[in-house]
Image (cartoon, rainbow, N blue to C red; front, side, top):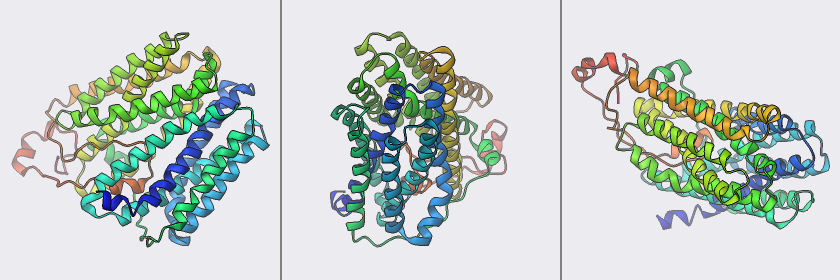
Length: 431
């Protein structure tokens, strides 16, 4: 493992620096916008802009990389991301920030695609799962550490914006320094949503609803923390606790889902997340309880999308997994783009306390839908064709790095005996 990690260390260092800068900027903007007196609905729309640009950029990433190469695409997009970080503090206007957030999301997904396609191209197939796990650990670690950079200075100062821009800029150094050959870029297609829904309806609902919940968390979590009286340093701790909770919970819950019906596991996760969101609301004024409750909520909420994705992989044919995962990621991005705008409007109408209630609505809706599907299809789905892999936000290319498992197909007689109860379409073998 370590002989492989050392050569790709430059790429991992580059993505760590990139996430330190972008993670700091995301939380910083929420805190600064709140201090500037932006309304919650305006902040929600601004933060939605990032995710709008993010999933729009998935369409441009591969054609751009194919045209100019990995290093040039990375250099161009890192320069634009660094400039956008500084422009936020030069033009403190909501509509300007909205445009800049769209640009920032657009170029960041291209940067992630460069890194992930590079890692995928340089990693032997039998080691992709381990490299993917290290990559996800770097993601979560850098995002958690980025929050603590808020302690360096006031959010009203220029310094933190400069730090974010410098970190994004310096991420160019290890990536451009590497002597890795640039891999060929393959086109990632999307499975038709109707076919994906027929195969794994719970996964479709999970991708969309978890996107709605997580988009609101990333966009408005710092705003909520600021509204309930936390200073910038405490907001940093609030966000870090949620991210660390996500890092700690994903592996044990995911591995548990490997031996049980993932739909049942997803339902329990969402119900527990609903209770944790309620605890977040009840902890208003009790800072230690707030930290504990958001860590529990983050730990559970971060698991919903990867468990839903693992269920989808179980239900698809081997040659459909990459395209199905790309479609699920697209749905997750659509939800993430809508989430901050919807939650921001609720906060505008009913106050900051409505954000935990928004989380409760999203998690409970997914739990109830999953429960309904469990009643519709009462079969044991604990025999999985793949293992759970912890993950956070990625590009479609990262799906190629997930561990490759042998797909076992049932006999025709076995399939016919229970075809009326399967979630997957009758003209395809069930997994």
